[in-house]
Length: 120
Image (cartoon, rainbow, N blue to C red):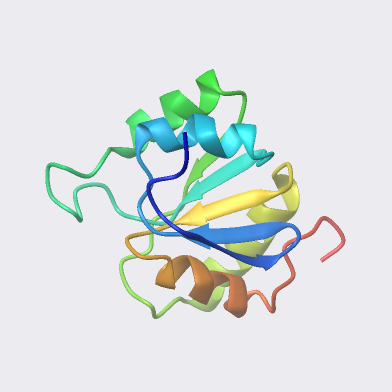
């Protein structure tokens, strides 16, 4: 089984993609990811969008860490950037982050200066 969305590896520790499905979580685990960050607010995509709780349950079942860090726009605050960088440093690597199409996940990665490791 393959992922329902393409991924973009931004560095060896961090990959972004668009909205994943519950079934994608097991695929990500088999691909070696250890954490998932959901940057998409619940309900943004309508009733077909899996909820954070659904993705979290699948992540836990697959042995992955999961964090819901929703951002509604490409404009992120300095406080969000600081929290995101700390979060990325605390999570097991490699990490995959997703939103609707991967743009906000990429913006957050760029905003933290591409520093997502424990020594960031």
